[in-house]
Length: 401
Image 1 (cartoon, rainbow, N blue to C red):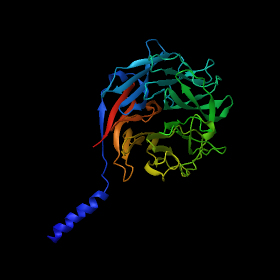
Image 2 (cartoon, helix red, strand yellow):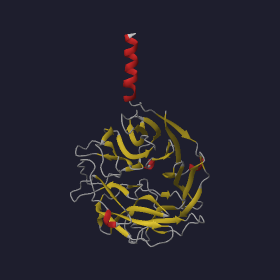
Image 3 (cartoon, helix red, strand yellow):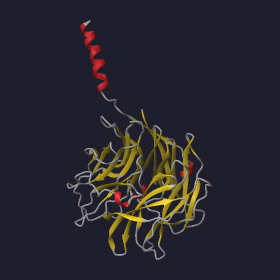
Image 4 (cartoon, rainbow, N blue to C red):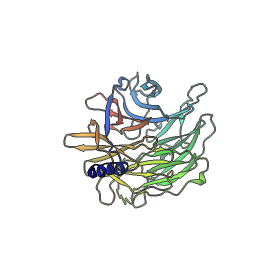
């Protein structure tokens, strides 16, 4: 009886303290609309609504289309074309973006070459919920010079207002700076502001909106002696004086003469933020690291290394499950048998899950960047399949077992 009592006591008092061991299941999704497409982008607008956009060949030689599909009523709806053109920059690292707010207003962007082909700009369209019609395509930014503009990140502010941040260079090259504006579907003129006047030239940016109305932006900074560490800024977009100074979240010391083309990823559930980034630090050893913030980005915990070594290629993505759920993190791994997009789950307390493969790819630039977004308790992944040809946009579900 004593043995039984002790065993029961051990279960009664120890079990609640043991965190559940997470495990992931990846299920491919048939997506015929993605045939011949490439470089998808995923975003969420409500608890159960996701948006997927991607580049597809047009009906004329050299024409590109921006396609869009929405996940609604537990299914991907038939795709529609948002725009098409012949002077677009279709880039593996700097792809089109789409964002919709909870009221149904939307913004879409893509890149077009300047008239002299020496630079490119960001073109955008806005849609009102009232009648569902899109505005004419126009420049996202005030600058029309033939320089580089790109790596856009959107965050929905509500009531038809969208935060937009991007990188913008000069005619003579660096410095590239990080800028932002507020886009309004009612046509209110936009002002531009600089968040950081010296940043890495071609690493993607990330932005999320908080319940307070503040926005958190993550990006790769650049010092005058070529240290390119991650930085975070936070502020109210309506008040340009409210932004915090760029803050380092890790002691990287990554000095490199060339752009890594490996930006950060952000996701949030209210004020809980998940941040993932790739770095080679001062040692030159590739790593993918995860950090979280419980206070809306005012402070971050210690970075958690989740992948590393010469096989780690980065190109990170993250989605945050709601109601205390874990973050799902994805990145690109190279092995002797080829490259794979892989993922793991990181709980808000406890140990990460085992790493699971999502898809086999080539490991080349043509693979682009895998995208993640959460709908309720499911995370969707989207990526470019380029081998065998032709290219195609592929989808999968990632769920907790």
